[in-house]
Amino acid sequence: MANTKILVTGGAGFIGGNFVQYMVNKYPSVEVYNLDLLTYAGDLTKHREIENKGNYHFIKADITDRETIIPLFEKELFDYVVHFAAESHVDRSITDPEVFVRTNVLGTQVLLDASKKIGLKKFVHVSTDEVYGELDFDPTTFFTETTPLQPNSPYSASKASSDMIVRAYHKTFGLPINITRCSNNYGPFHFPEKLIPLTISRVLNEEKVPVYGDGGNIRDWLHVLDHCAAIDLVLHEGINGEVYNVGGHNERTNLEVVKTIIKTLGKSEELIEFVKDRLGHDKRYAIDPTKLEQLGWKPTYTFESGIAQTIDWYLDNKWWWEQIISGEYQKYFVKQYSL
Image: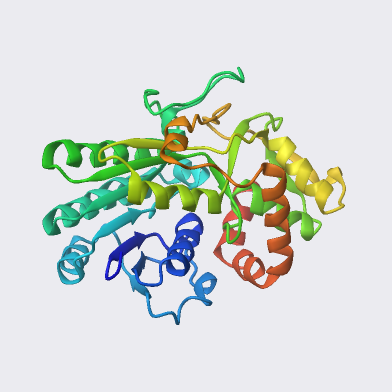
């Protein structure tokens, strides 16, 4: 892959940021371009250990800005695009759906137009299991790549829409693509509006931890580095036009996750505060990753090993989450939950 150029959109975010570091370190001969608008959840301090490496480049830009994106692609002639950039927080999509449609749908279309124009080798679109809707609590049922899309929130609807646009550009224009749909990620550099980093940061500060409803909603948890390895494999080995589900076989209720973190940190469960359930809260997500496993991928983290590593990372990197939580996120959180 010498002299190869890979554009990673959303590379200042959580999953995209971990993927940027993964690729820069694993492939020193590959030029990795991180394109990010640096919205509230975007942060470049996470890349301070790679920013001086010769194969890492940062571009600040809005993926919806056609006047910037098209000329950028024509100038750099990227070989591959791995598209993470998205508004991703369900709660925010309920209060402001329009920005999710703009970024997740129209932004994806702009990137596809630019990719088509330069004859891109492959466009990997990183999506979510939330596009499938919800499962009941039957532990024998799973999402597969052929499960119909039935999104239930403005966020998941915007992601399902972008999935369909990516598929259409493949079918209509012949653009080489893959779509990946992952379960809930966790790990280093996770913005503290999501369940696991929110719980860790609040427990460490002896603050109340909000849990929606009775905490019985179930998610399949995937360590972000296992996700990065999966996307790397799909980028290189994925069959053109195919969708691949990425799941960890680590199902836990939200309440189980919170209690595990509290116990690990030696704190009291009295920190748990049950709050009104959010609108359209899906009961359960669970991924069948058989198709990806047949391509050669297996997760390396169990939930137990992954959550322990994640908690240790937060303890060792308080400088990062303290600077994040003191900013825009804290204002939003207080406004939303009045805690």
